[in-house]
Image 1 (tube, helix red, strand yellow):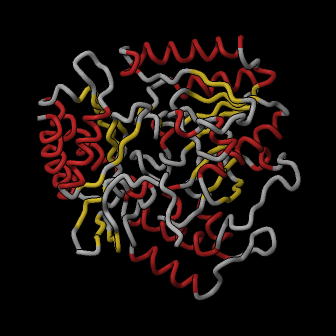
Image 2 (cartoon, one colour):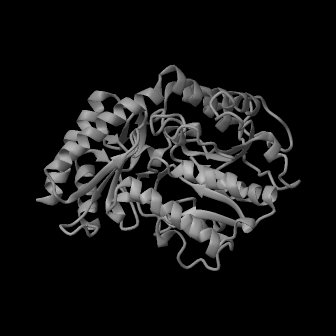
Image 3 (cartoon, helix red, strand yellow):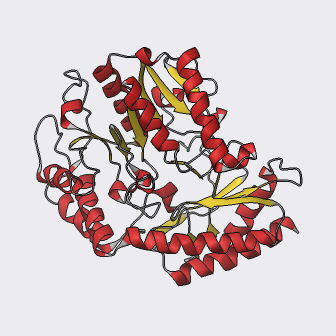
Amino acid sequence: MAQLSPQLKQATPVRAVRGSGVYLYDAEDRTYLDFTSGIGVVNTGHCHPRVVEAAQRQVGKLIHGQYTTVLHEPLLELTERLGEVLPAGLDSVFYLNSGSEAVEASVRLARHVTGRQNIVVFQGGFHGRTMGAAALTTAGTKFRAGLGPLMPGAAVSPYPFAYRYGWSEEQAVEFALRELDYLLRTVSAPADTAAFMVEPVLGEGGYVPAPAGFLAGLRQRADEHGVLLILDEVQTGFGRTGRFWGHEHHGGVRADILITAKGLASGFPLSAIAAPAELMSQAWPGSQGGTYGGNAVACAAAIATLEVIRSEALVENAEEMGRRLLEGTRKIAVDHATIGDVRGLGLMIGVEFTGADGEPRPDLAQRAHKEAADRGLLLLTCGAHGNTVRMIPPLVVNAEQVDDALTRWQEAVQAATS
């Protein structure tokens, strides 16, 4: 009898049978507040009626129209609709199935365009588990251990993680940019560097927003050296941070290539990279394609997702509810010395557990995570040490649900640290 791989470890004990909005339900119809969103995927909530209806309608018309064989209407309509929300100048799109695939497609494009080999990434970044993406991932050794040799050409520079260094954000940014300049002189010469790739908020690396000035510093250096700036918005895109794109918190920063996935299709597998048409046209013939990329049902779900985000003002709601959630978690942290830091943007909040001298306490994070699940609040952990609990509710969450989650979280933290 076949069974799931024993390495597929579930973060919670829940066996979900259905979902609606911010809630999941098990076989006994017990209700859980899902503040994981399938790792930031169901931004419109579980089974939003408009997404469900769009997918059901499309299933009855065309399930799979392979997009290098035939064109189909959902593909063309989605591309047009994405043009309304993509940053100015990013007017050419290539579709894939997952974030990892999109990351690797962005690397391929950057290398073709520049004729250069190296990709500079930043410490703590997560870009995927496939061989190329894993080479760019430093959120934890578990994502790349035992796989070597990995794709060559990856160089790693510090990320301005101010809390980790014990500095102000300004000091952390100054250090990170200075070290990037040093890397370009000692490890990856500008003439060998195709791109800088960065998450506007570290995801698996600990839910660390890029401080002010860092992305602008990357843009400045990219322009100076003819390097492309790739923004990995797999987790931060589609309203998650209280802006449609996470980098929009950093006014004036321009991506050469933008990567999106997760929230794009409300749970259907779909990802994309976007770039200026002039840049995208420099991809070598045959370098872009795939059997399932731009699947008709996934595209229909993505169109409905965009409609829901706009009509229900979910980006604005993410900003407002994110502020409420951040303020609430910080108030709880005041009474618990073992919570060293609470940080985030929009509905992307991280709570880091530490000891008296600042050492990571993954045991406390895991305990709080379990106590929350016992109280019907589903959360995840992240960070290199696993000592950060992350809160990622669907963007449809309301004030009453945020307050309910905060009550359960307060009880969980109290139980975990007593």
